[in-house]
Amino acid sequence: MTDQNADRIDEATARVADLEAELEASGTTTREAEALSRIRALLHDWVDTVTAVVATPGVGRVVLIHDSGTESRIASPELPYLLAMPVTFED
Image 1 (spheres, rainbow, N blue to C red):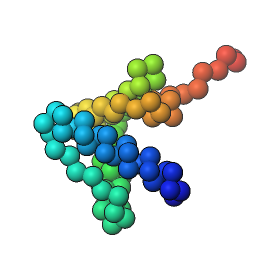
Image 2: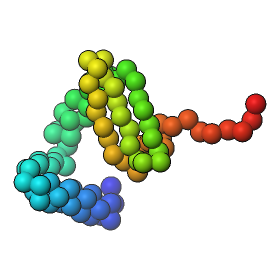
Image 3: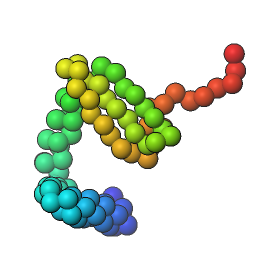
């Protein structure tokens, strides 16, 4: 990872933690390799419970429907576009 990318990640992490603090909700941050490995494993297990997805690129939102019927909402400028099927005008 370049120093510029590391700086951007540090800035983004600090910005999110500061915004959460303004809401009087504390958050935790980590960039430590072992902790990230654990978190990634947990996220993979969590994603494996997804049974349906609603991607709405126009509003930058993805809703995951889990096998328990619960919903998880993700706001992202990129993820909805990654998940949406490309439009084609061919028959």
